[in-house]
Length: 640
View 1 (cartoon, rainbow, N blue to C red):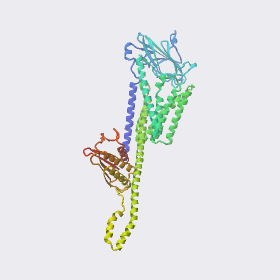
View 2: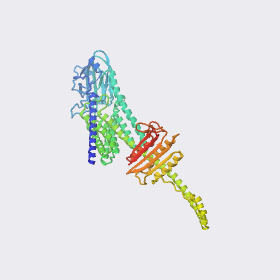
View 3: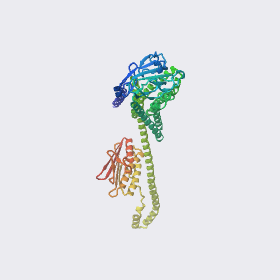
View 4: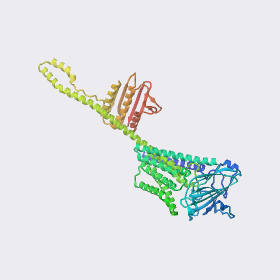
């Protein structure tokens, strides 16, 4: 049987992993096909010339300038250079994103340096306004349109080089021919030159695309920051403070990682934006490992080693980008390889940990496993589909990071819900013990009073015995019998009523018998139970107190008619069975699956919730029913 259960568990785990990976891969393929600048429909240039007529502009009011840019390696050219008698000849025609730097495919060449990009667009002769959205160009450039410099970021001159990046849009009027020249230099970043395709077209179409992208990204960031704030506020109120603080920090790091379209649109600059972005990504993975270790109970030396490695990568994300500006190619490549290795190592660690946690029956880690598998698929798809730049949404890793943050949030929410349930149980136990203590004090007060009365009677018995002894010695038998009949009943010590052999139940029965008499309620109690039960005193007190308290309250609301409570407690094998019937006034509120509180609208009463919680703790069941015709409420609780 145990082997069968293990096989079934392994099968479910395999199905979960396969389905998650398949859905993630399918989603990424959809994004690659329909939200990708490189696969978007539209005209493209041929040998440095893009031809657009009225029909094409009507069908494609905005397009991505990707193919056939003229590329002039190592030269910062201006429009005047192309008007000379011997204009420069391009080294090659490239598509944007073909190279990550100015090395242009030569492995031995440096990715740093300078280059010029040029594209000719043939348009209708009619003068009209066009817009060109220029993405980040690393890391300094000048942009010319028809001989006029419309944009400059930093200073691309190698002797006065100053890095500055940002996403900008320029509008201009043109007709016939548009010449776009971008002269760029880089000596400070891992990427160089123009690596992201510009967007060209009619102003409304280009600006609406940019607005949609910024709106989506702003919404995601706003939601993440709101969740971070709420998580930070919940932390001090919960017993899982470290998890909530870590999750708040995780959300903040996620925002730092994905907010660059917003910052680059409204703020230009270079450092510290990229260092913050890389640090946020590295810290996000580190915090995910940290949370996973806490949730899955991983406290061995290997988990600590991975955490230390993550901390080292976070420190490197701060320091090494500053050293790249010094021009060290070795440091630049080393930093790039380190971050890539960290991605894969962290992904492997959290994947292995999540799978092991699910196998160990930590069910709450299944949600995190799904988020981690999505992240793993994103890493793989990023390698399999390199020609991808999202139009509106995000990169594969960004989308997967969002899914991972959501999955971690689900896990922590379940953890907090469990802690909250524990707090409710502890509070209920505390209240039950306080109630039980109060009942015991009242019951013991009755016992003390009865003991004092017994002492007084015993004291008087000596005098009665003296009188009876004298009567018998004087042969006054009839007088002695009459005296005994008159004072004998008063001389018998009163014994308190015992409802049950179980001490706690006896105290509760006494308390609610008195309470029922005060409220003119007939209380019938039957108990077939010994003092040896597996239920703790606090839970038994909480269970019976909530049942009887609800019953007394329901009976007290009856204006006319009978008031009764019938309580039965018995054992059947190892099960403890508690049944209670009480009369009601008919004002019972119920939904399809619960009875609503008479004190609050649209929610189940805390008493019934507490009863369910205690029953669940003993693998028991509860059943509540209402006989509308006889106006009687019935409760059955079985504890196993």
